[in-house]
Length: 280
Ligand code: PEP
Picture (cartoon, rainbow, N blue to C red):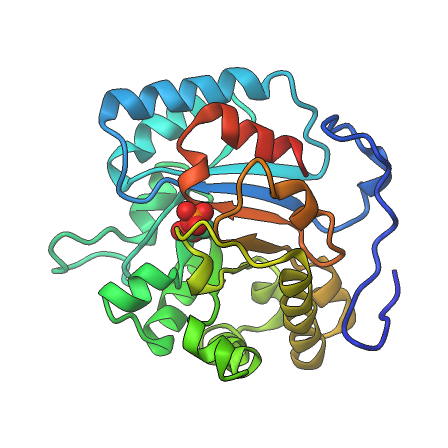
């Protein structure tokens, strides 16, 4: 792999085998991930059906160096972990509180998540930044708390529309990384998955173009080179999120620095979600 100088990290050209996931040539590369963020959707029965449909279908996939992660509402994490025991997906939470236990009514700790075999947790999602005023400092505490209990943070970053229009999107994302993640020692940072989610693309039906996604992903990777080192940057999985669907996933995922997707709305229907997994 080579650094092209503008922060673009060249991957070997992918063979044209989609949707067959048995692509052995990519074994040495960073892990590819498709994660479904169900947000506050689904009744218990609906969740059970969706989990089962995805679990059954994934039996027919060969997921070399590829991980599928489902992030249902916290109420369904136990059920998801039970289904995952016999299936090819991992379980992620959508949120946590950065303490092990205590008087934090309504909150859920990384210790509790770990006790349900939850391996990932989304932090920094724009909805939590916006509606729950989550600060860089608070997200830093969440990252630390998760890593203390061997849970991989899926750290979301991304600019709002006015920031892109003001051409400050790179600065915004750099600050998000610097203030919430870049305090981590390198061995801890290596456990983090990053999701670039331009806020203007989330739930709007307007996705970033593949070029816009690639440009920001390459920028993020370059920031990791500068803070840590080339190898760490090259091995960090950076997902794209924001109106990613079965129609646009393949083109987004074909970009050199796009290693998969964090999927919201399109993760709620098994058929569409599985088509997105196939697009990796
Ligand atoms: C998200 O909320 O993380 C997301 C990417 O949502 P959507 O795919 O619906 O835009």
